[in-house]
Length: 333
Figure 1: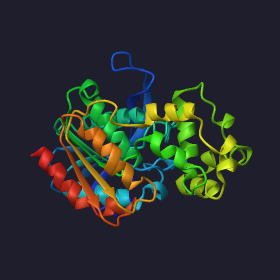
Figure 2: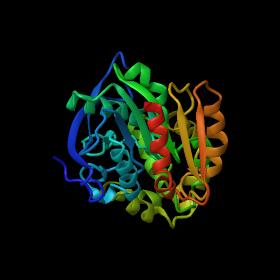
Figure 3: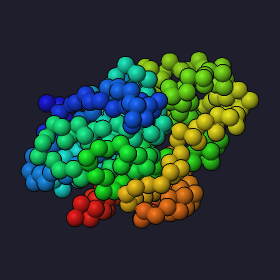
Figure 4: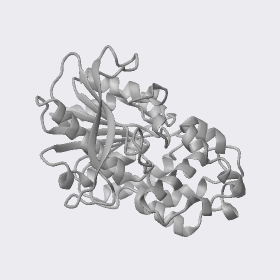
């Protein structure tokens, strides 16, 4: 049994699990299995045999940044979201994502990697509890919202006998070609450094140290010694030219990031709820409400967009817990 945060312990029994997922370098017909970890949280009361996958926001790159083993990165907004899901009687699968808590490197912001681990965590929940049904919904924030949108594209070809009923994405990362070039010289530089190393984990020909400037290279130890807050603090005060050689991302790197980071390159297969705060300091409101919403709406699946006025990146989760759970309940009905 896992020790759960105080907000969740009265609501659920938790088990930390290891389960199989697959690398991005494989396909559903030619899978290379890898081990991933996470939590399966079973409601103590009112259980109704539906599965909701919770996709957490950025925690870091190193093993100590796995929420299933470190409550310091089991973010308060994640606890609030999961608590509401448990109150509705849903079993919650909360994957760490590949490379967090296992020996592999973490493919940070490689959406298809998180997507596979999310879907496979739902399978793990069903394998653990035979009374669970085959219907599931994915609910994710930030990195997890991005992964959820990728899972929506992948699900029917990957989830076996499960049926994805919908995806809720809160402040999801998208459109790397639009936002990544804006990051150098801002307090968000740590996210970009992590994204470069995430890219390297799936594209070994890409070497981040060749585009990071010497002051930024000197700080890369924090990627293994710390988690999100330490990484952001380490890189926050660098100028653009201290971060990157020449002070800007090369177009070739922007193109690579877009390939792996951007959802909506393929058609989704289940309805989408898109939630975004207008005061988000990490994922720009204008990107979610503009290009991403336009891209998703071009496909046939229904997309509901909810704007939360004045909400920050994490605040959008706190302020939408009931709204998201009500939307999920309607998908299950």
